[in-house]
Length: 430
Image (tube, rainbow, N blue to C red; front, top):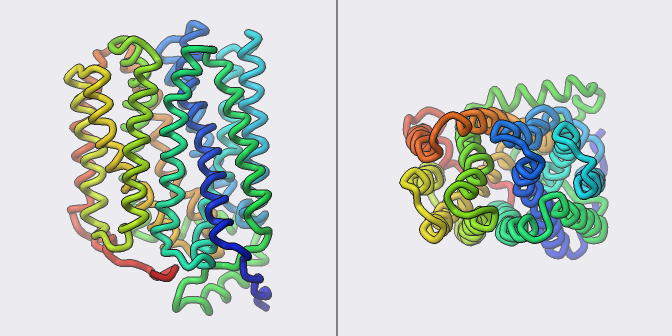
């Protein structure tokens, strides 16, 4: 027997806006965590390899914990999962701030706390993302526009938090910067508590409501591992989802290597320190905000396959070339703005595809599995970049990454299931 229909959301656009702002706050905390971590490792005498280890500790929990938490998010509920995850993530970064500020946080302790924070941060981000189809439908907003709004909110957080992270590291120290993280996570939890209703009607897919209801009823009695396996099977047997995840896996490894590990090292070696790295990261975020805004406004009209390939090429090629040529802060900032513009349109496109292709009953599972597959390359990229930077020239590393990035970005031109990128599934009004 199917569950009774959920009551309509009151003031749905306020709920959608509140969710976007909460996502912004959580992402701001994550940005400062990622930005401050390499400088904390350096401050306690760590090597480039140690920087890679710390960055790996921040990303590995997404790969390991993401799939395991997806089933729990589907079961517990999206709103509750978001709030609980923000509270726990805030407490872990607060521990980093307190222990680091009092010189009681060695490298192994930092790694442990970063792993704990990442494990709980993943279900929070997932829960906020999978609330979008329902809130978009209730608000009479195209899904592309809602995803673009939240993606733009993420980029806005990076725009503000990356330079803020640079300033905080330079003025008060990397350990003290983690106090700001805790505040951002607290605000995110409060916003979701206050503005997102406890019950949100499901955003059913047109034409498949009966099948969804039947499959959901069959799954009600299934155990945790069965539900997890069902989600994995769906992702791995859906060619377009699988191919997107694999391409993003490789390119995320390159992005993590060049922007999370190599950028701080390049800034220390070539640009004078953390402030320049913060400016470049902020320029990337600024371009991304504009790109997400463009996608939010016109994404439902743009040719998806062309956008997918072109945005990835522009994201990976020009900035890597600029670093390889030894560019200084001002030209790097200019190229970073253009790079962010491309990435800002790409991310909501991928997010929209993930939400469109997933059944309502397993939205969180599909989301976490897709993200986890895509993030598998991140810890590998971080670790290899740290080791390589101890042995090779930074400019050479950027050149190699740039060439490889563009070659992988051209994969959708090979045809096959990539042709389905142009198809749209009507999960929300247009």
